[in-house]
Length: 273
Length: 286
Image 1 (tube, rainbow over the protein chains, first blue to last red):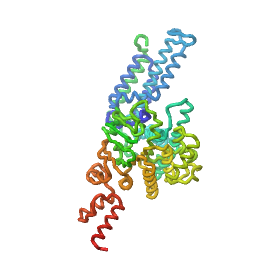
Image 2: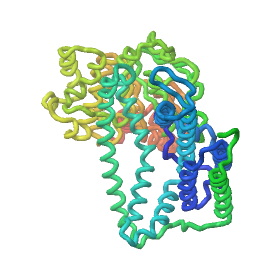
Image 3: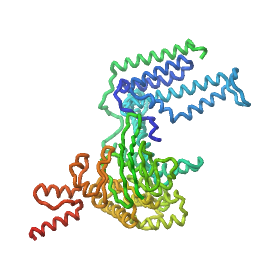
Image 4: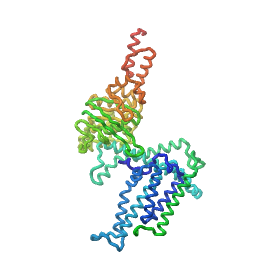
């Protein structure tokens, strides 16, 4: 149940994608997100699909797991699609029933938004699936370090993000355990109306809060004991090095970006879409 | 209240890179009133097994039958099962959440639909069983000591009046006095109310001191299910799966290798003391 949520999880596999420089991967992901919002035609979406499929194949992570990453957001995706479907104006009315009206633009917009969100979630999940939290922090820290001069606490931010990511699976596991324990005491999470169900969560949330604070406290003590003093003069064990694969990945990314831009600029389409 | 487990398999994270078989074709039968020690290495499948026994998880294949309830069927009334089989999880004090000890212990019976009068009678019953006095009932569970918290949590499960009680390492992280207290509480409960008890433990000493039968799990398989004597007589087998016999038995075995025979079947310190006394007297050294 809760274990199905794979957001922010890392799958330790040995693949070319896993080995890419995290700085490149973070930048690629950002670029991918921007590009996804440029896409609005069938050829462009095909391009994204092929590119994403290719990366998933290379990463050796099962496509099903990447698809599953969108599951928790399915509600938002469907909601957005429906809003777009019914609330977009236009002349070409396809279907009308009283005040409900679906126009051609509405359908196009709904499909656009749903596909974009889906690709967005899948693309960004791939980043955490293939990058260990430590690599991710290193990457974020190095990318933010130019801004340290103007007072941006790059190291602290990166550390906070890693700790948050690191604790997602731990807290999920903890939640599962507490749910089990309360179920064993006869707690019922599955029946009743929404208020009853919300109230049923109190026996889970209170212990979870308490244990989160306890964990935070313990972690802080453990870091203090090992003389953690923040980012100043801190070096890393593994220095990030850019190698040949990173440049190959960069060229692949550029080809992909060029395709999306070309689709956009020249209005490439299949049968008008 | 017998428990029958037939050919049960369970796998975690099916289809993900973390796929792990937790139980592989496990079968056994537990009689009413048994006091069973469940031992096994970390990750051997103990926790999975106990979760199966009150329907918190369903097996991939196989059957779990507790009393007349078939836990694998869809139509089963889970509330009845939960009131029959009580589980005290590891570090149960982390599941306390109410404002007062009274309310926390009352959570279980209230979920079973007991009235307020019944609940206060139950709590009066349960408190002495875990060795707590009634003046802590109005305190917040979070201001108690570790040992007290654990007892409150155990009382919360006992308050559901289970006929089968499963405890997952109830003594972990307690000092020796606290450990002995908890273990004697459990033993008392078994002897007085004839509750079937399954005690999961890493401590061979605790197991040797309290239970009648031992179940050994290793690598998702049931390796042995026999009396304490039979399980601990094969120390090599236990060593091979990363477990051991009680410390005092190891000493007796070492002495035997040195030519000092104290007899077999010594698993508790008391038994060893008796055997040594007997031998010393026999040799007329005193």
